[in-house]
Image: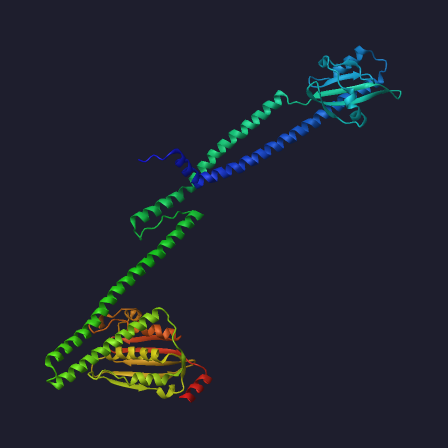
Length: 488
């Protein structure tokens, strides 16, 4: 087991979300509590000072009024009165107008209060804060008036330094704040750790999925509709999307392998025939003109077959890339006629008919004649391929509300209803059609071209009775139609 250095472990610990969250909460709490304590202390000090000042005022006022009523009072009587109003923390002294002490409370000792320093405070009736004898004091004085004459001054003093009780109170408060912060930090740490455990379990599950490389595994979402549960559901949705993408890639790879195998097979056959014919012609050396003509005809047929295959592969690539092609207004009837004249192969006994072209004579669409002709040839080729000898292939043109329809019907082997939704998939071939040559690309190419012309292609089929492919293309307006017909 690897032991990490202390610095590394501390760095990892500080990088944890629960650690950072706890530290931030404690900083906020500490600042808040510090502000509260300071505010409380300042408020307490202000209240205590006001109370002390009020006590000084009451003591001095009461004494001055009492002395003013007894002008002939002796020193002993004045001292008794001072002792009666003094407390352990309040010092009282009666001084002459010149500042000489006449009588003092017992707790004064030899202390002489500085009358000269508080003359202005006495005149304005306020409490003075001064320092003498190296100690801070609050002093309040008031004159004793007898028949309008100042007979003396009563002065009260109180030390403003914190008492032992106050110091103890402040220490208890600081200690309480510190202990509260420590306990709160521990509780917050445990609470955050408990709340983040589902997130840790998600991380562990995701790590196991990564290590296992099993795309079917999913995270276990909790029952609570909280943020972590939504995160798990989001990750599961992402995993589902990745699984679908992976399956699609696998399917594409499988299709590509089948495609390469089919292309190799389709190209190998004509190449083998062509090479064999050339080899025989080389050996025969032109001694048999009829054999030579037949061999050249076979070579031409196979070369045309290869050319059609290459053309379809190019079209498939362009359709996949949605490559733009030249569009122009064109008479669709002319395109249908060109495709119809191709007819079925001469070695097949299949009747081909075309109806309704007169309804499409003025029908104009925007598109590419070569591409649309290729679509018709693909469907006609399939119709001839899957229709037995003696059958029939029919082309029917119809005008509808805002589009035209081209229907190509045959009396061939038909398609099972369960297979119909898949016949436009690339490389797909229905089970009853796999014995005949082909790659399953034609209908996929046809649908791509029709969709690029903003049209649709659909099929209706009954096994053993034949199929009907319906191509629908949008019409151009009458002005385009008239213009194109005039040019024709």
